[in-house]
Length: 187
Image 1 (tube, rainbow, N blue to C red):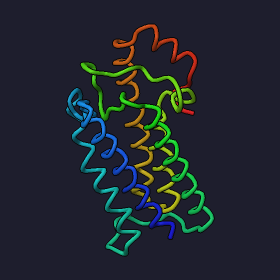
Image 2 (image 1 turned 90 degrees about the vertical axis):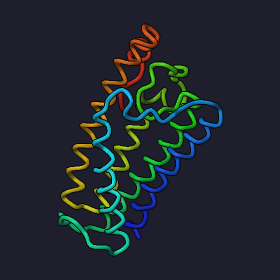
Image 3 (image 1 turned 45 degrees about the horizontal axis):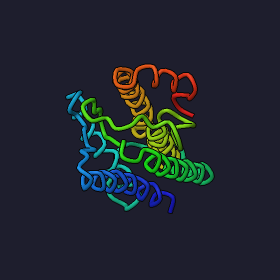
Image 4 (image 1 turned 180 degrees about the vertical axis):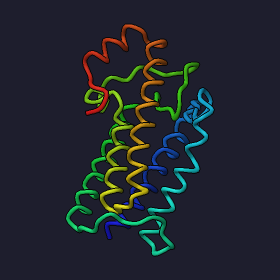
């Protein structure tokens, strides 16, 4: 059951992002800006598809890749809790973002600087949510390849956050710097 929850969590995250992007598109806002400022972003989808395969293979009995490091039902349920917290934080961040939600950097039409809601407790609640979900998935499916994904994911999130921070400093200036002084990067 926990493995099905991991698969559902990944699917739900994708649905949430696409749904929000579709909503904003109806308002004339192009929310998907992925790969437009950093062409290396296009290396991410094949690795994301491999992760999806690994999770769905584990949940639905397809041929699996890699070896599991341990098998502990209690730890699996801790992983489920991390996934649920990640999903809830992600939803809270999407609601808090309002019309400013973007996938990728958008310096031409950035929207308002959001500092309320989820952004009052973390400057990067969406990346924090992704980190929780990825860690939760590893605890549910403790495959050594997924563990590598956790470490690489955290590195990629941090890399993207640093790029976005430079962009936000250019766009919002002192207002963003003041915000950084009040709110932590993660939780």
